[in-house]
Length: 533
Image 1 (cartoon, rainbow, N blue to C red):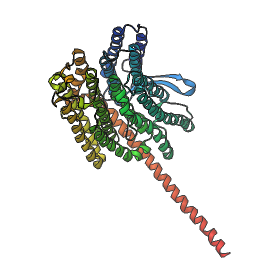
Image 2 (cartoon, rainbow, N blue to C red):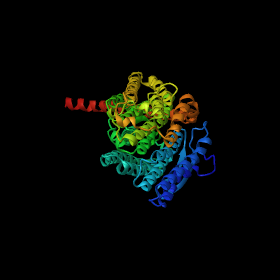
Image 3 (cartoon, helix red, strand yellow):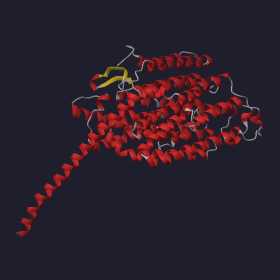
Image 4 (cartoon, rainbow, N blue to C red):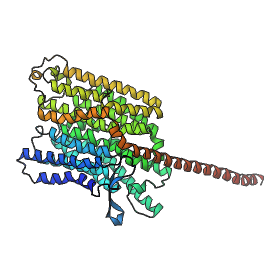
């Protein structure tokens, strides 16, 4: 269904790529022109994406703005794209954060500006392509394409240990992707064996009846790829290094969008393709999510580096998202989706604020600050608002997401939900303690006494994020209505297919028992006859 009779999805996906090519034509000596061109392209891209939001039909669960044409017909590969309530807001978040990231890099990036801007725009195309692809090969192409510009952003413009962090990021995510590729190829051939059709069409593969024993291994393959990207405990160790060494914009886009590719992957691929195996893994995933919540919070509490503290907070926050998704009720899944957006806004803003401090002091150690609210009151105000959002104070976006997740978790896993609540308490402790030490301790360091408050460009960078904190906190219905129909259908389809597989499993077990009894009875006369002889 395409409400606009126009390939809007292709335009949204590939416009940043066209912009990257345009930026490449500008001389590398004209740094301001390169920055301006990249910013204009990203702003136009955001404007182009708004009709998708405006014309999206909230009451429809199916894919919208669909584009489906053969690509490699002989292999069953198609250029198949579309958006539903699960992917809609993450697409908008991507187009929203990219100009914020470019604006935040205005003064920080001074070398190889052209290459940096090209990487940012190429990364935007790759992320959008992965979010809207409904063909498994097309998805995998964009999934792998994301690695290249992100690797460059960390490895070229990162901190002192940038090469180590970039390699670790690349190797972790590439290793997980190999298993997913093997599973995709297996699905392709298994579908042909069952239906006689070669296809990578995701919506058709949803209906494929896969034996339970096979589902287990395929689910593990997809799980590894997506769990590394989230990242879930204990596969999270690449994330703090990548965040700390990445430039500010790299950390923002990594936290804001790239980590959501993992949680999105579970909703779009792993769960609907392998419902029975997913159900069997659910207690393990819920337990790992809760461990991640507590572990991330406790490790964040002892970090001396503000950026590393924020990085470990991501492990904790994404644990909430996973707990909500695997609660398998509408409150949990919608809460998880909402928290994905909240994390992109709040944690992205935290990385921006830390980057602004680093540009002024060239240090991120908490002990090097103190009392800076006296000399940077506007900065301190923004920092306080985002801190309150991060710890889920009522009235902010973070509260809505965490509340919905915990409600959903209580319905499915009461014990896990109770433990997860302690993660919220720990989150308030480490964030407010960090804020107190940075902002309100004595202003006794000469370097801090000379700090200048944030300028107009930095205020413009932060202001849209702060506005969203309150809009999403007070008017969550504006966002949730777009998800309702899709999530309801997702749960209905999941439950129906799980019951189908469960009945099959029960029937197979019953047949095996009957066969075993018949075999024993058939063996008994022969044994008795042999004994009498």
